Image 1 (cartoon, rainbow, N blue to C red):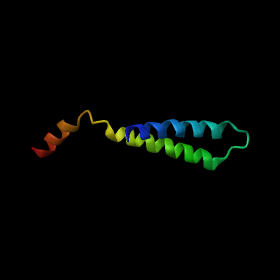
Image 2 (image 1 turned 120 degrees about the vertical axis):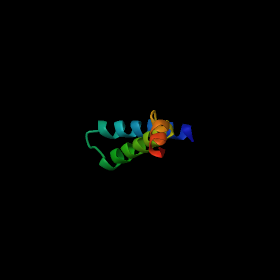
Image 3 (image 1 turned 30 degrees about the vertical axis):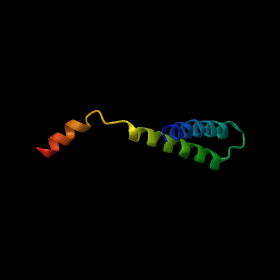
Length: 62
């Protein structure tokens, strides 16, 4: 699953750059590329643990 997220980021970035370089820009391809890029970044960011996650949980319990 981790590699799929990285692949989404790479493909989304490539598609977004490709759609932007043409003189007659296809906005739907650009939107799809950016959406794929954002989905990949979001899924990768979800797996990174919070720096203050344990501290805030203990403060709310007390």
